[in-house]
Length: 299
Image (cartoon, rainbow, N blue to C red; front, top):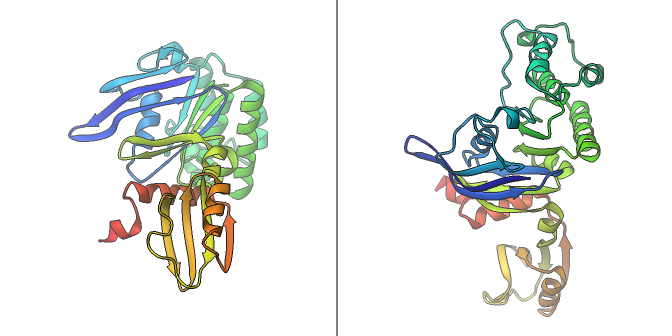
């Protein structure tokens, strides 16, 4: 289990993580989403022990991660821009990692080199961005980590490799109980893979929730009313967003689906339907609640 309690990280006067608290269960795939500069990458680097917290604690299975060699040996961090030694091949990096990580699995390394469409004899510095990311993932998975931290991991990967990666990650969680935290702006990919999601904004956690529970607790409803609804018609409902085009209304409402539809049907719509929300729509709706929306940004 990863426990984050009252975590604070500053860079000069900038507060990147502001008294953040959350818990991530072992054996889960946790997606980190949030606005630009919300603290996602800083959080991953602090969990990995690269940054020292300015306040609060991070504990992985009861151990602090900062300057803890035994703890770091059980986790692997793949940053947005992976680092490799100059002129090294993936085999050179493998020689290094097998001496650093007690869980290094040479057979797994060879299997992954065959699975990914990578020219393993090529210098990594001469590879494309997508190929460099594949090299980083091969090395990461070969260390057999218990905690895998991924920052924008899908960036630069083609659709076939993205599907391969998702299958491998799900396999690791199912067979070994590995815990994965993925920070990404690619919400479509997270929706396919994650079972839990956390929304960050301005260095704090807006929410952390089971993905299915999150999507069941917020609903998009389209309905047509003639004549138009009075302003207070939905009073008592937790309406996150309301739009009107002619006689057609579009609502995003938090609550139980049955209660929402019962209330809207009582207003005698000409037409009504409830639509499933994508993770992207949930993200946009929740961010608008905290004041982060396109109208606010361009004013």
